[in-house]
Image (cartoon, rainbow, N blue to C red; front, top):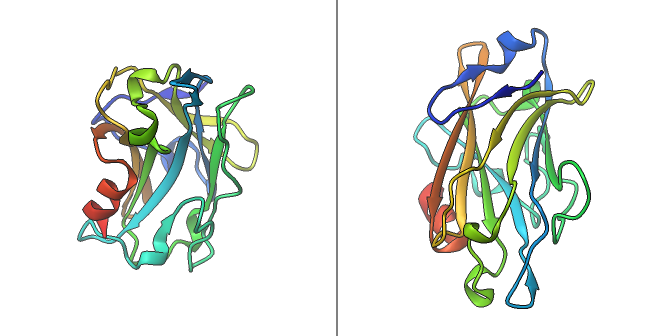
Length: 188
């Protein structure tokens, strides 16, 4: 059974699953059409050093940069509307290959063309992030976005941080306005 993450209550995914080396972060949401356009969520990953900034620009993983320079991450594709069951967008991560300078993995969710289309997280229903064991696809932990952010279009949904030999995952649910550029400015 998956652990339901709560904001600001980290858990060690390595202690939950000893020997864990590969994970998959999965984003899901229900389809919605607002102002004639599908609400399109995008999953991205900021790989940050101990200073809370990107180790290098190439360590920002998203639909236009699918693989990190260390080969630890892979973003296989962009879902435009949240159709179907299960995770709509995923990022595969090999914890053993992550550059030793990377201390934090920040998972961001943004709404594509939110300002132009008038979309915000208040239009999104049943969104979540799953952290799965890639070996058997079992859900290790899950965070359900229950907040109703009616003015925000970008969100740091969860973080995974190094803690000695452990990797701790924590739900954040921090919302922002200004789209992906706001988050890039924060972490670059």
